[in-house]
Image (tube, rainbow, N blue to C red; front, side):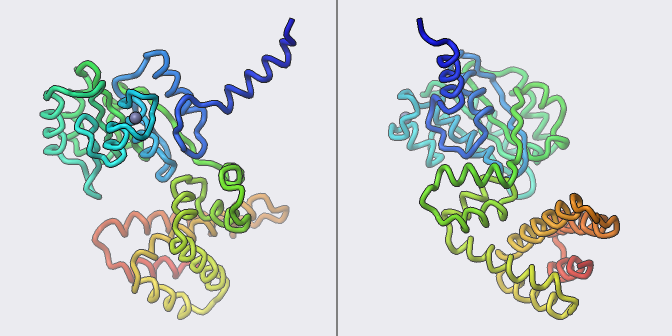
Length: 325
Ligand SMILES: [Zn+2]
């Protein structure tokens, strides 16, 4: 007679660790297991909407899910389907993204035309990134395809801004919600995966990533990117504690010479402000004025990020931001 207590504990532990497919994704086990269950039970929705913060890994998951669905060999990663999907050249797996601004109706019309062509694979899979950026015309056009799905056609949609997605689209999708990790969660995930990596680097990568695994992976794989983050982190800590405005403006000057640093600067600034806010919030001598100032600062960084996507004077916008610190 087996010991039921131990067996159920082993089964529980096994179900927690064991995944059917080699997703190679940091975290999100609950969501991935849900998707595996859909595949295993042949209960695949004709449209999924993955919702969660930018950089959380949604695009990687849709990409890998397309591979899992199209591969005839248990997501082998070597067959023609797996290789073509990885290179985004698979004829029945279509990748659609915005042009940094919107997804236009012409793109969706082309897609609808393609959907009427016969397929050579198990499924026709359409991956659309940032669907909140569909223009209203494009969204209505897509809606028709979602309302009357062809057999074995699967839509894998993502958004980091669900409040801007039409309710009529949301209601036709199976929603999967993804959450950002805490710094500690991300750190343990990275430590488990990279046992031989320098602990100090893992600590810094976890805090720079602010719970976003996609950023953590880039920071671990790209030494130049990591050293840019590290340098800006050290400079900003020094500058923010300094009252000399000319130092802050000189720093902006330096950033303007290499625009790729601006995004890093805003990410690090946000990280420092959030950290300061949490420390202040839980401090026994919590200072209301300081907390309000930090919240205001965070809002300003978010606003600056948004403004820089449009056609503004970059120097003026960054200098305005620096004035409040
Ligand atoms: Zn394969």
